Every structure is written in C-alpha cells, then in structure tokens.
Length: 319
Image (cartoon, rainbow, N blue to C red):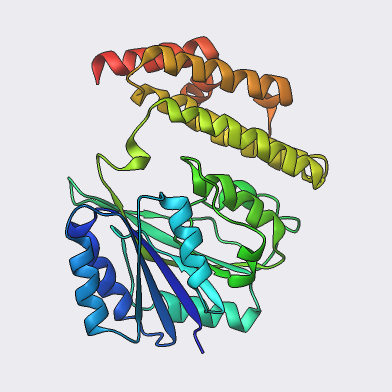
C-alpha cells in the first residue's frame, strides 16, 4: 500500500535535481511513490531522471510532458498518484529524510485532512538559511480557528493532503496557482494539524518565478475577487468578518509594497490603484482591522496610497 505519493514537477533544474531526488529516495517512510514529471526541460534533467529510475525502479515513476506549466504538471501528477496522502516538492528544493514518516504518522493517528509543517528558506547567493515558522495551533478547522486563513502559508510543498481533496480541487492555470487554490482547500476540510519542525529547504533564487515582478501581478486581483465570492458564498465573510477581512489586507498590502521590485512604474502604480480600490470598496473600514498591527512606519505607508507609491519610487531610484 502506498501511503504517500510525492509529486515532483521538473523544468530545467538539472543543477538541483539530484539533491532533491536524494532527499526523497532516502525517506525513512518506505511506502512511498515518487512521481517525477518532466515538463519539457531543455537541459539534462531527463538524463538525471532516467538514472534515478534505473536505480530505483520500484520507487520512482517518470513521465514526460511538453511545457504544460506548473499547474497542469501538478494536476497530471495527481492523476497518477495512488497514495493515501499526496505531497508536492519543487525540483530545486529538498527535504528532511523523516518528513513523510513523521507527517504520515501524525496524519494517520489523528485522521487529518491536511498536515502543515515549518520550513527553511535557503538563499542561493548568500548560502544563508532562515527558519520560517507558522504559529502553532491545535488540530482544528478554519471555522474552529479562523486565524488560520492568514497564518498558514499558501505554498503547496510544506504540507500533506488526503488524496480525496483533489477529487474536488485542481491547480488553476494562473501565475499564482498555489495562492489561488490553497485558501479554498483550507476552508473546505475539517481537520488540519501542524508539526512544529522545519522539514523543507526552500531555495530562493534571484531569477525564480517568485522573485520576478511583472504585469502578471494583476492575477492577484483576479484571484482575490474569486476568493471573495467563494468566502461570501460559504458564509465565511459574515461569520468571521475580522479574520477574513485581514486575510485580504495581508495579501494586498504585501503585494502593494512589493511593487518596489516592479521595473515598470506605470504597471506598479496601476496595480497599487486597483489594490486600494479593492480594499476600499469591499472593506471600507479596513484600516481599523484589529489584526492589522505592524510598526508605525510600515502602517503609515501601507494605509496611504500616495505614500505607498512614493516609497516604491524611492526604492527603485536608490536600490
């Protein structure tokens, strides 16, 4: 019986792939399958995958696609999974060898839908490692603990999911695909648990998708509009108004300030305008939200559209 199916999308990550796969084939949980999907890599990633399949034919399943993108690649991997639980690992990251044994045992013992754990950020250039901790919480649901909607991160890879979840959900074809699906999944399950340990090593590269800022940032507003309707239809905005209002504040103020990385000032200012319009129209009193507490300077900048634009302009000039 396969207990955990690990889905690894691969696209031109030959320099990192061996470290990733080594961390998976040496897992202390033996009842796993590793589903490696090469999404049209032009480097020697496929040669590495073939070598590992030869070494571990009973452990690794290899597939080839042609540039379908991360969402369709993950969705394809899900269709091939046979495990009780599903995990996702990016092919330039790696994990602790005990992550799936610990995760599966914790999930099975408590009949959890999702298990969350902490992770490390590994900065490629500086070699610096930084712990990223989610606040501890008891086994619960979003309805039991609505703060989880903004306290749990939306990366798919520091979690374990019951496979049945993906009978209802799939990754959408959009830039911020993980952010577009994880909040809805979290709101739809009954039992979420957390292990207070860092297991994943998430690689931060200067040229990674998450560090590039372009006009696709407007997908954030499309996603948040859909989520607003989802939360409203499920009664979450009325039942947990303060927490779900802060969810939108947290996401949008983060992306507003990130416009300092946006090279095109016109795009940056347009996004800032639309982000503030979203908050002001849907949550007129959002600046008074009880969870919205930061240092005074950061609050001053984020609460004022003009100051936010000025801050981003100054950053571009002096960075």
